[in-house]
Length: 610
Image 1 (cartoon, rainbow, N blue to C red):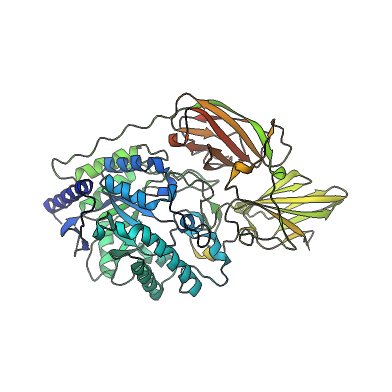
Image 2: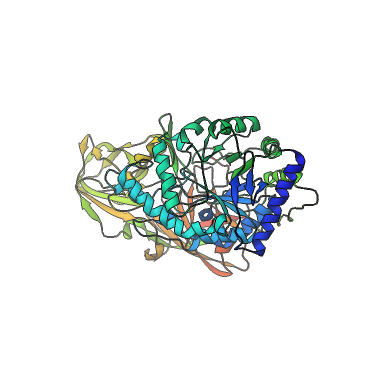
């Protein structure tokens, strides 16, 4: 496509986006041409960036989209997350931060098109790759397959998603241009019949516009469904992009890089990943100059709050649970502010705009504040806040207990006066071992720990093992081996230990914690509670460097996990979740129960390892 045609294509996109605000119900057509996407019959180049609605407070969705416009994006990409919307079988939730339809509508109001990625499997460094934990309780169910039970649950889910989002497709007056089926399926398998079933289910759910697949270059042929557009991930060489797509799409385009990575994500115990903008700006320039559409993964990562981080696990590498910050070294940082990468990419995009077309002014960075001292003066010991247990001869998994996330305390009684090796067979994922209510050590799946030498005092001994789900694997062949807790058995001196009580501690509702005044906590996990007063509100970052391992809630909002090993040492607190006057903070601390104070900084610490 020559320069004049390319300018006209971009100008068409700008005009069409402005029309979205004028007439939200106007129906458009979106189709494949031989070389270009065609919006209302005219060439259209998508310059898209990925934003995930659950990783951004709902109150900030619009602000993030204004930033997207200011960088020059005309489209937003997002996954849809099954485990958010059907957390328990048959119980659906599309409210609050899960209101994906409102996210799409706000994008339309801001003059942005949307690429929708509602496959039941998303990967996305998200717990279980987006699958709800309870699928593992369906005997015989096999994800990403033609197995009957899986397809039944898949169908139920995708039809609920269709009710929310199918009316927002471009051919129905909305702003959803294309919908992706499956997700990098070629990296997992190559069953074209399974992909055909995906197509059928999507259409039956009301997705009657353009459907597409996306795969890394080396796996595209396996994951592509003939007749659909094959989008490509992870490369930015125009000649190679066009050659691979031509080979799989009847010798023609259009050409779409569905995931173009400006950096990468982080996991616990490794450095924060950063890539200078200069290494990517030249490639962005080349791709746009070639008329190729692109989706930056991520434009804005945000935060994976609560227990929703995923993990990687491969035969050649250890278990790698991801951190809560999804900063991704993206053009927008975790708080939604422009980075040098944002400004560099904006300059590239400006080069490809028609003469006279101006991008919006870049909004100023949001103010951030420090909080010099926060005291936590109430203590709730975990062992004094246990629910009614379930009993079993053998340890039960989280799934056996119908528990998705959080912690399970396993308790049994042993005859003391002995020393020996305690072994947790197939621990998943992190354990704190206590004898008579006092911590004596930890075991960490990341570093292949499952055994420790313990000494038991004389008499009857209470053995407590608190196990944390650190995130189910979200990519690769181990999706089917994702149960949590003590998944096999416990041995002491090679003898199986039986007679267990299991206490479910999902920490989905912390309002039930019973606190006592004072800070003395003993030597076991605790929840500490305090308040702090603010005369003004702004973004801030809780400094957790003096703490050990745990989670934080501010005004009832779960901010995510901290762990002294790094690289993440602060927790981002969005201004939208703070208030003038009294604010409440609760900290679940697993390793340093005597901690009582913390501060907050005006910038994050994402690169400190210990």
